[in-house]
Length: 189
Length: 189
Image (cartoon, rainbow over all chains, first blue to last red; front, side):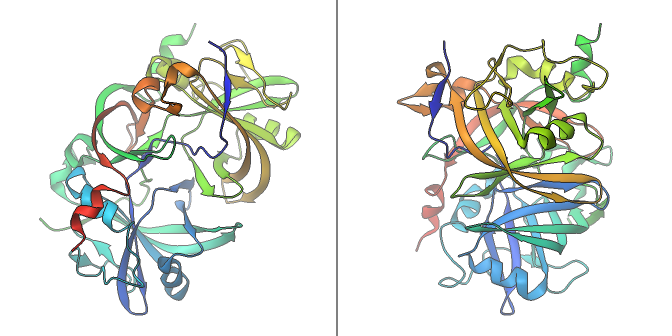
């Protein structure tokens, strides 16, 4: 079959289910965010793209810090909920058990298996979003999500997000189909 | 259980299986890349973070354009392979059936269910990577991957990538666990 042109508003996916945390006017706030990824190896720099309208951005600017919290599938309702209501209208600080790492202005979510504490490295302004580059200060998790000392995706059950059109869907991880930097070696001549 | 500090080199995941395409010195080249995501709504701007050492970066700079190609799970070996060998050493232009959209210097992969054709919007230099911001010119797909005119993740079977430590793994999508901007409404009072 031949290729056809689609509407050009598609975004790369699958993406991670993720909740960004920031202290806004002294109160922890959390928001669903899927436009995140790693950007640099050393130091470890991530990027999160935040709509200029979002309340969370105010807190990131105030404290020059934020957290990324990766929920497991049992948190899918709350993950979606924090993307539906704004911290301007609703106090989201009591939705989760909040904990802190090295920085008292970077709230993190205890229920999430993985938490990344970041300080702002730089911000790049795009027309309707601000790309917040964050340098990773610390990563937190728990023994129960590990196998032989390494995080085990099948133990913490990450949320996978797709949005190939108007409808966004959350998914579980399926079966493993291969090891990276390995399965491609089958094509070596 | 209590939180423990991990090594701070973790990156957000799951990520998409993705192959970046660029014309380097007149020859199509392709590389596995998972550090991609959307960054802006209007215009649709994506970011792909490319290691400064990569041959692909030369082509992106030469033509100020690149493509993102999203493979289905049956392409997992080739997806991994193009991340294992450099275009400096190996001609990867014959690995796939290459097609072009509006720009003759932006090679895309016909076998991939989704192709995004981008022109460079801006580049941001980080210590070991260059973040290439690309404005989406066109998105291409095929009828066979759609349901009611919209792309259907279960039809094109995207590759999901995780790397929670030294070992990276490719996965299938699992079961759906909820609709976005919807399931969170269960928590409305």
